[in-house]
Amino acid sequence: MKLAERIERVEKGFHPILLDRNELPFELSIQKLMQMYRVPGLSVAVIDNFEIVWAKGYGVAEAGTITSVATNTLFQAGSISKPVAAVGALRLVEQGKLSLDEDVNKRLVSWKVPENRFTKDEKVTLRRILCHSAGLTVHGFNGYDIDESIPTLLQILNGAPPANNLPIRVDSVPGARWRYSGGGTMIAQQLMMDVTGRPFPQLVHDFVLSKIGMDHSTFEQPLPESWTAETASGTLADGKVVHGKWHVYPEMAAAGLWTTPSDLARFAIEIALSKLGRSNRLLSEIMTREMLKPQVEHLEELALDLGNAEHPDRMGLGFFLGDETRQDLFGHIGTDAGFQAMLIMYGNSGKGAALMANSQVGMLVEDYLVQSIAREYEWDYVPPRRTHPEALTTLFLLAQRKGVAAAIEKHGEFRRTGSVLSVAGENTLVFLAYLLVFEQKLQDAIKIMKYAIKEYPKYWNAYDTLGEIYLHSGDKVHAIENYEKSLELNPDNQNGKVMLKKLKQRD
Image (cartoon, rainbow, N blue to C red; front, top):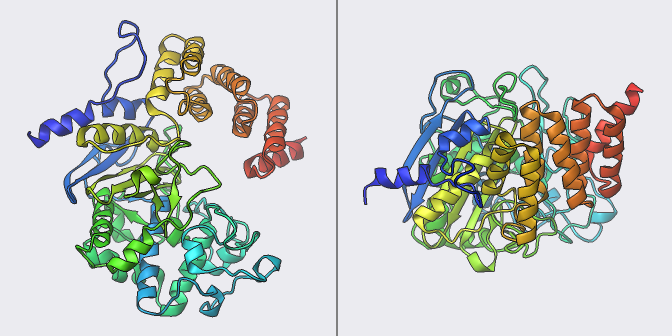
């Protein structure tokens, strides 16, 4: 079979579900989906039998321009930075410069993890940092506008101005539970720098990137001018370009990687081959197996990288792992301001893909495309529970062409029949509401979220989203009411706290 035919089938393998063919056009293409979701550019590399069998760019590198996305166009990888950085740390373990299981404070020089009652008997270790079980705070990072002051790593660790994050601290017993912490990854970054005396970008370049030909990848932040000619510009969910084209991420190990899908594919292939004992350019077979061994079997938070409620993710060292039914699966997703990316790899069969988009909602198209690739290349694929792309597209098309009432009726049909109940739930409705907001259909978006609250009355984010939409429409009273309800259901909702504080200060 010709490669061009396979690519064409992947590109046209999108179908809204459960629609009467006489009501709406049934076939979509990747280009139509990108247009629908305001995703200006997308790049993909497909892996089969441990090789990159094809790579292709779609759309433009910056919204409103004509510069096409090429296979060497650089995108921000977001949290896919973490497994790449983790490999650098594990190489230092193999060299004896770091230990997976000792107190990191024994080798930290520039900064120490503050001790408290939680660290009395259990300590923060590199293993626990890499598998997000170290009891550390700060989920993720927003980066910095090009006009903002950029903090040092020490300021980030201490949450000191101009850092825009809270201090990175231990607030639960290390090893007691899993909780995703980009803050912990920053401690790993400092640790790697302290034991080598080298800047982080140079260290990871020499230890990881250059070893496997990731020639279009760098952790340099800010991005050097010599790289900017080949970069994509980030795009917000409403289709507007990020101010300054992208944010700066001094949180390099957590979110600072610039790369391409082909380079990410090379990385995934190397890890898969290393586990099988067929390559050791980065890590030994023993260390790679340790990296891909479940360190945490049951994630307390529902991770959304690879699985869903029926097939929950497990956690390795840097990578999310598939459940018992897909034990060779590893990968990660990533989000930076205006960018979203995805890396997925089946280590035993050598199948996988890397996808990168210059859009804050690029994963809506990436999830769709991965499903199409999975069908074509016969993966044992389980759609993750971010939002069901086929269900969302169905509902959005109905809302556009037949009105929001038709979309609500269709979602109710999903629930009654159970056909897509497990994945076409509250998150799908939240995304649908935002898509309507971007089309300036605020009242329709409010109707969708009122329906979501009726169907899912305990879902805190439905109230938070409705509060935001009410605020867009100028209704502060109902905005406050819904933000308060979201906090009642989820006291840790930081966005709700910030918005309520701002709204009440204005009064």
